[in-house]
Image (cartoon, rainbow, N blue to C red; front, side, top):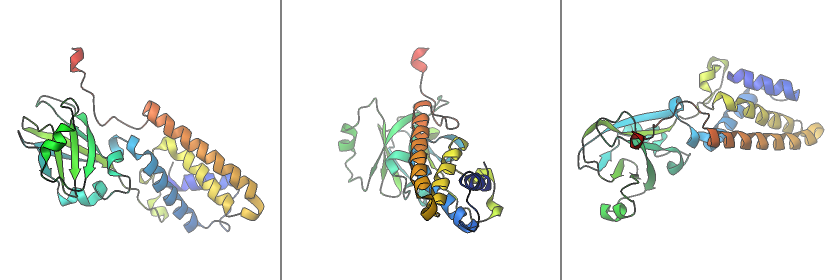
Length: 239
């Protein structure tokens, strides 16, 4: 749905007029719920909902510096939580057409003790350490040089929508499957603005929203309903 349709559906279903919740208030509420909801579901996101940055891996080199354009684009300053939302994949062979997912951990500094960190990670389970604000260390150290051998993906930021000029569906970062949940949240907030006459409706609507939100998140986790997988698993052992 386009943003105005989400707002209008919530108005229609709650019987809320513009004199109770102004247009500006409705747009602000929409931005607020999208940010909160996206924070909860972004770690399930893939494909066009993610920013992407590729790094050329170099044989026997495990530390790579991230450009400012990446560190400034919410990769390391994200409110989502670095361990939950940043995805890292690596090509283990130059012929790989997919990225093998690797564990992501965040440390403030690396202490020049790679041997310590390496011993914490079995060779069968590669790990990427995002260090401070500008570098990434990969274990085990890559043994071959591969163009775009390392891929980082992280959630795109929610864009604040303030007018009808931004009334297009792509401006809503939360997937379309989740738009009805946003409608339920807006209805709760609309009822809350009419608290004196709609206290019971507001309390009931809050319960409806929370139940729908939980249902959708569980559905995403179980069925991965978001678009296109970012990484394809290595199934070569089946050959």
